[in-house]
Image 1 (tube, rainbow, N blue to C red):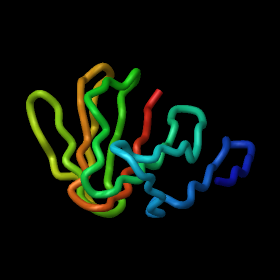
Image 2 (image 1 turned 180 degrees about the vertical axis):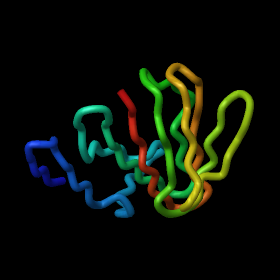
Image 3 (image 1 turned 30 degrees about the vertical axis):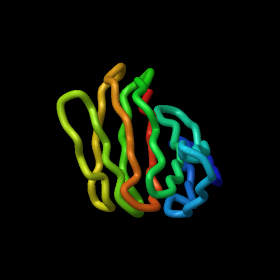
Image 4 (image 1 turned 45 degrees about the horizontal axis):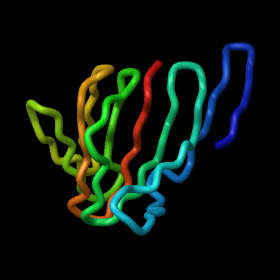
Length: 111
């Protein structure tokens, strides 16, 4: 991550969005890549079969796969997150993710 400031604000370059850094165990590896005005970006590295169990976000989120295939589920619907597909979820909505393949997911927490 690198920042540059100017009179009109700051631009942050976020790198490593497709880098798979998985860990052993049942849950994915989460790593905060950037945090700034309006958003926090987190990379999630999933090994096939890993699950991020039911939870709620404290703010609206945008979730997208940068590689692989992850099932993203709420009580109403399941979506296959593959590159080119994203979901926006309101604050407080219960959801979970299940990796159908080794995958990298970018989570953007919107504030």
